[in-house]
Image (cartoon, one colour):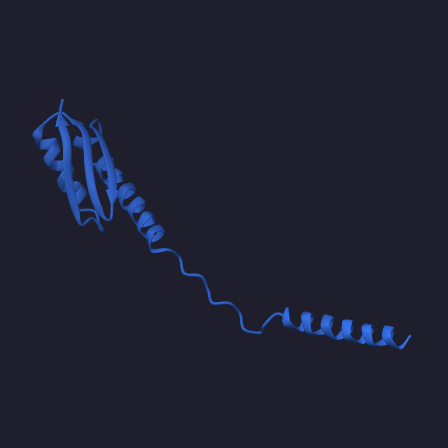
Length: 110
């Protein structure tokens, strides 16, 4: 009978120590940082949208088939235009958008 009391006391002590070791801390975990890559992606997406809108709002370029891609604030224009003047105008419009660091012209004449 006495050995059962000792066994119960030891078991209770082990259980208590285990539970205390698993208790939560009062210090909250540090906030997670957003990865830099996603910020760049969101910024590039915004720049692409702004350039597309600016090109669409330019009357001489509305009918042009111009594709816009942005990577690290560098805009690449591709597709087809009717004249060199429209090609130059598209590059000028893209350069005028805030956040654009450079414009690569891969457009072709129809």
